[in-house]
Image: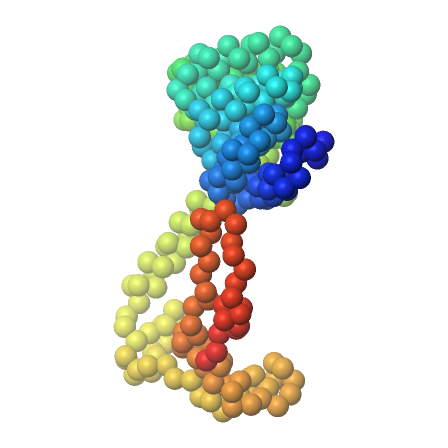
Length: 301
């Protein structure tokens, strides 16, 4: 990237570089804003291949698949880099053209891709088969990628690519109504993926949510004026009060020293929700102006 920017006027290079850095930093947190930064860089340096790559990747993350495909094809022509073939095929899927996606996958497979790209291509291929209603063919694609006739017990400790293939296979089983077998796969994947890089933990959150909902229902069934243990509370409708002396003792214990009246008032205001909200910034702007001295001051109670 630095090499590409050297061909620009220094001031323009600095502006383009700032936009590209911002795009890269925001792509996970705010892909739409990242795309705006990448487009701003393209407006200043559209003939640089890395800039077109940045726009394509940001557009893909932001869900603008038409622009992603257009920019990544431009990048491939300008740079000769064909590493985005799986992404381009996935864009065709997202645009409702699974046949085109399969054609791109087959062309990429004929070029003998490396292991990492092969995983991506097989995932897109299986998804395109499902889009076409070819569930059995999709299963064969994933089973072949997993080594043929895969079982949850044989998953072992695979790499992330293998785990993603297994997750896609479990999703397919679930979609076909084989819930029990799919759950076995999800459990095996979760055991092999303690950091939850595949996101399979979401498949186990449903049961916990149902338990929480049941607990909430049980609490609403209690008679008015009783707590979860069935004990009678104080007067119904009495407001909760904050005792300054007790609060002062708690604060003193926390900080290990003398507590002033201001400390107590601040804590009471926080408990009662009287602390003013923080100053909101306009995150839709590409570059923020520095906060004023007044904005940088902490709120007072």
